[in-house]
Amino acid sequence: MTVNEIQEALGRYSKNYEWFNSNYEILKKEYPDSVVAIDNGKVIASGTDLENLKEKTKNIPGVFITAILTEKLIWIL
Image (cartoon, rainbow, N blue to C red; front, side):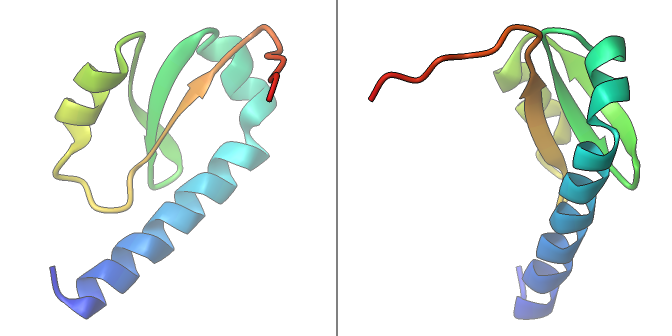
């Protein structure tokens, strides 16, 4: 990837992340306990297998992938 392509992918990732945060409550209802891939303001793939989702979206620069969990996690450090 060129520097410009990397910058574009990072900008796209940032927009996808912002869209996710803005729509989290809706997504939580539609995709409970799922992994979602977001691009251009929409969920482009979802499921329960992170590796499978990463494989499906590996050629999409800037795609945002995250888990939507219905139960709160407690981190013990």
